[in-house]
Length: 349
Ligand code: NAP
Image (cartoon, rainbow, N blue to C red):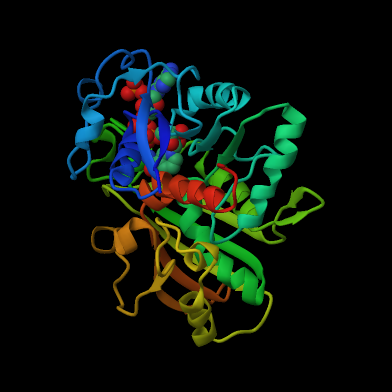
């Protein structure tokens, strides 16, 4: 199969680097067009980018020119990892010009006609793009993936919502510094410290969780009918967001049934063998002290949600720990899986 050319908006940032790294050996897509701010435009990628990943910069990317974030000359499929201060307007400009924009940024996630997708959880929400194109008069479209903290939470909740129904959810996060981009949080703020505030994060997690687990009825998403409360903290971890979660369910179930629901969970990306789909989207660990970000964030190439410490909760019903890689499953890998789902559904033909 001939590879499809793709572009990356925000290619020089933390998530942009992940895109390039994940696309290096991708069987369907090839990154051929890169764009970033005026600071980088006109330079070769190798000069413009302060590469921060452990794996080396892909050789093919080094000599690519970094473009301005303008649609002329860009391929049809565009991944966006732009700073949210500028992503909103730029993504709309690309969609208006006929591009399929698969975005990480928060700007359009909650727009009623924009799919907010996790392919294992709500692939049917992709149908929202029909109304989006009609209402906005676009030949292109915008599709989004959730915030890096939402994704691990919702992956863990989806099998429970399906099997037993959710009533209440409490989540406290311990979020890695790479989640704040580069250079991110100043060393003097985070070294030996915990910052109990990430601007806008708790509201995003609460709203996005209900949209993702909502039902598509008559072309609109009806948000999930359960309460969610999020506490978000930044901690001194490089990659991987850890979450302490308590849930109350609508049915009485045993601890064993809960774990079984996670272990059995498979969905469309697994059935279709999409290239970035983890074989096991949820991995449940039995050890008393797992998951841990340093040991477990890269499970299934960073695409799985790892769950552990499952036990009764005296306030709600059950509590557990979930871990998800923030720049892979929480960002670039999530967008890539969205694009793979779209291709398998015929949206990129
Ligand atoms: P980052 O490291 O700060 O990168 C930001 C990117 O945006 C860079 O390529 C930068 O280009 C570009 N940019 C900044 N200002 C611009 C402008 N005025 N015009 C055009 N391009 C501009 O941030 P990040 O962590 O990669 O995050 C990117 C997006 O993904 C954000 O919206 C973030 O909220 C979202 N996200 C991040 C994570 C994560 O774990 N990091 C997870 C999920 C979602 P220059 O290098 O030229 O300045």
